[in-house]
Amino acid sequence: MDSVLIANRGEIAVRVIRAARELGLRTVAVYSELDRDAVHTELADEAWNVGGAPAAESYLNLAKVLEIARAAKAGAVHPGYGFLAENAAFARAVIDAGITWIGPSPEAIATMGDKIASRKAADAAGVLSVPGTADPLQSVDEVAAFADEHGYPLAIKAAHGGGGKGLKVVRSANDLESAFESAKREADAWFGNPAVYIERYLDKPRHIEAQIILDSHGNAAYLGERDCSMQRRHQKLIEETPAVGLSDQIRADIGDAALAVARASNYVNAGTVEFLVDESGTHFYFLEMNTRIQVEHTVTEMVTGIDLVKEQIRVAAGDKLSFESSPPVSGHAIEFRINAEDPAAGFLPNPGDIIEYQEPAGFGIRIDSGVRAGSAISQYYDNLVAKLVVWGRDREEAIARGRRALMAFKVTGVETTVGAHLKLIDTPEFQQGKYWTTFIEDAMDFSDLTRQPTPATPEDEELEERSMTVEVGGRRFVVRYWAPVMAASQSAGQRVAPRRRAPKLERQAAPADSEGVVTAPMQGTIVKVHKAAGSEVEAGEPLCVLEAMKMENEVSAPVAGEIVDLRVQPGDTVASGAVLMVIR
Image 1 (tube, one colour):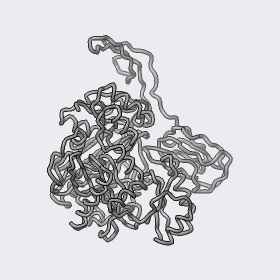
Image 2 (image 1 turned 30 degrees about the horizontal axis):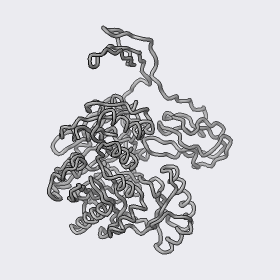
Image 3 (image 1 turned 45 degrees about the vertical axis):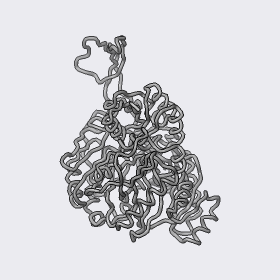
Image 4 (image 1 turned 180 degrees about the horizontal axis):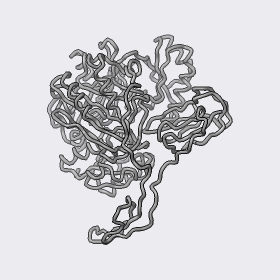
């Protein structure tokens, strides 16, 4: 292996490029049209265009990514996380092409990517799952029978899902049928498979995950646990290690269980086994296994001193782990996900251009990011701006260092989660390490957070077409490109062509009487319209679904009445504030 293609973007692409460079490997980046000038394209030794802005046309285009890997003569492919990272078909295609796959086997990915199959694998390994069904549900009667035996609350979950999509919590028999049908619809819409299963829902659980890595020589290591309980919409916001309040015995048992699940599926490479720990902290249950590097792998690296990405590459190359056994843990580490979201508006995604960007620095502070001033946070991709990771000799010092770093982190142009983090770490629950997975929904109110003033920028920018003569390998090429209008319109070797305006999303004006005007809460794509023009609707009734930054957002009717003006259909891209429909 002399080179590696990183089939991803953003901070994880930057992270893998740096690790590969330290191992002396040539790095190959891929980028969409939107990411042409992204940080990861400049850091890599070479970068290849993989397609249009939508992920389906670029980063999720399995055939195109593989085509580039062959053309670039990449010796290996690292998928990062998200996109194709847990796609068994992609892993198989890479291996069949004679390229090293930096990850577990396609078979292990397929087993652990199926929630029902993974539960069966855990059961076979003697690891207890949350009480639930082992096969897809066929009717609501099966749900009722399970409830009669195990009681409420219970959760109906997509068999092939994740991230809270296709998950419905049922607290009474009155909600069984509607929740069952809704979960099936969401599972089919999100994952192309309506299969759902059921399990007992734990109130106020903690989300604890175990970092493991295994090589092909029989060596296996448990690198400690992470507490990922601070979440919103089932998406992690803060992660830390070690988890507060767990006994040494529970920590050891979690590690043993994680390795048992991995061995049962013949797992090789880095992986994370996730568990739910009950409110008492004495019982834990298998939840799922992620067959890739995790976003929050950074905190494990901070307390162990082990570069997990470099270990992934070594293991894929057939080498042994570079350390003999599970290493001791030193100090405490916390990761804060700095996302482009508006906490005061329910963590609504907030795409846009970053105007100012200044990272904190100092002892014990690490920043993983793939942005800079001028970078665009697009509706097409995840809204992660950066990961702020802090280390301290103990948790108290780590929290204090995190507070200082958050206060020094400056991002303007988009709303971020920095203010929410500062508020969260000062709650008694976080200070005492006694928070749970729905703590933010149950106990927090961010409506008092002040939105930052955004520097004024032109709505659009006048561009001009230019051409430049370049030489590549001694061969002359004339390259055409678009760039902002400059005071000096022409320079040596450069011809200026007619000007044009940068493309922009149209923002239609709202009618004078705006009570029944339904507008887009953010820039995004309409993926579903529930009602037709002329339909009668009730206040609060769902009207359409707007997708932005990999999240679906339901748009509801502000008033009751008739839809007299319907302006969108599925597939339309809309700007923030654009009129979607009018109700009279």
